Length: 255
Image 1 (spheres, rainbow, N blue to C red):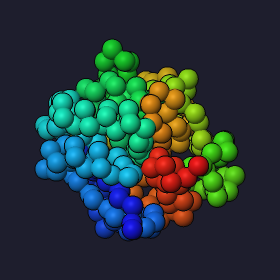
Image 2: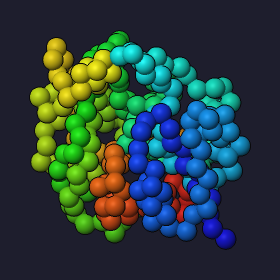
Image 3: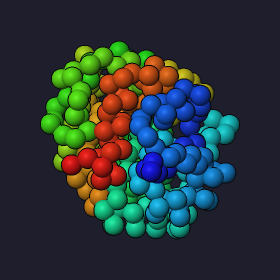
Image 4: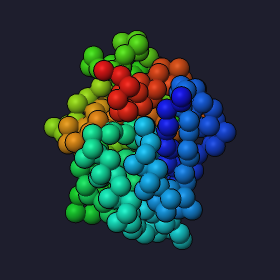
């Protein structure tokens, strides 16, 4: 009998066909795919509890309009379902822009160990992004998620410059060949205001080059994988292996 995989997406554009092909390449899963806001939060509470594996590919809790962004917290039922899943020892995998989701849910980002910010605030400056970066992914830990991967492999993908608490994570993979400094990234707040690929008036401290990690703060296995901006990454066999491993590991299917 196929294991069940719940996928949550929405809040950020992506190419649906290639993403569906990625999901099909991850193994023998019975996939339920819910999308914020029509599905996802409204329908997910029971599915979150039941699913063997859970994959976050969402960036929920935002409304972008007329050069501004508004945020909201998730519903109490959604928060309770995630917290109950983790408290029971059942884990999850979060990919790419899920690091930005639910800006008004601090516990979520405490579990994840980092947060991408679209606006400056008490946390400091807004975060940085850079598309289509060609880098070398270097495995830094012997871990079930990195099982079967070469010591390093090429990736072309979007990278983030944002707060990552390395004391709260166990690093698994780092990006080599690209400096995580403000002069290599663009301002998210400028992009929201309509100025894409701009760093005018923006600065940011040097960031972490860790692109895959396991949370040390979550009571269940929680893996974050920064890979996943688009089809070039979806089709990378090493990225596919890493995601498949992470789903197996967080669902209890891999020791």
